[in-house]
Image 1 (cartoon, helix red, strand yellow):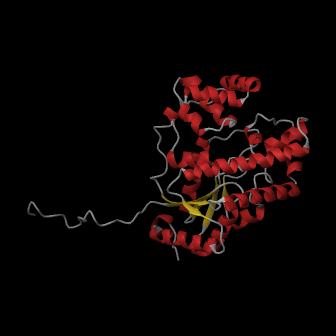
Image 2: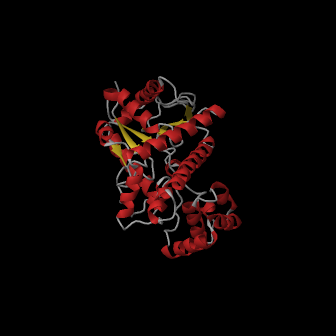
Image 3: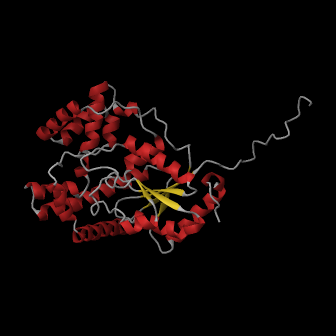
Length: 346
């Protein structure tokens, strides 16, 4: 071989090799947009051509006994399309973003080995960020520090603790709402335990962004006044349907257990948190329902804000034929990496 000769299998740098990473699909969006319904329609349209299993990305659907207020898929839906990460915890237990990442990756691996496509569906943005971007190796929770922070919050309010966070970690405070008790508590806890802001911990993380070939979709309302008004109407109608389906009675059953309190992470979920005081004697039904609807709208607003900061998301607006078009898009991508799905894609 002469010095200028190339090996017989050498390829030009301009030649693109097929992307053989496993395919992972995400459908996210603000609460009330119909993500789960769209995912079911897509899965059933793909049908025998490409089996689909859904992995829930919802921090409240992990809890057993919390069905109506979390819009959990019913048994008939779960029989038609397999679902993962639903009903895996008692509401007295905690479930962290780190546990979600571990469980979601394990579920995706199992689904791929079965020759099916994992479809992530949900709107818990912390979970999505943790999975895609990674999590820092943060210190474990400290019950003593959390009790201390809870006591301070009871005395001064969470906005005051948010102001404290802004002094020690302005980067984290800018990303956290002044009344987001769970995230304020965790950020202050990490700082008190390590003297290092949580935002610095989070800088050196490695997620699954490069591990898979991603298709990331966001189901969102149109970016205009009419779109925002339509979302508010959807949320109000959804809240009414939940009440008619027995949400208040569901919260009453959880309260009657006797082992749950407002301090449990499960009872901080939107809807449950606002209805809980009805049974604890701290609010009227009318007041609680009004607060719950307002909290739902605020959640949707926060989710939309997060989604606007994700430039590689493919934004979808509800429309006739959307499920069919989306199924076709996914099928085309699956054919390109069919060998990594361990199944024939017809």
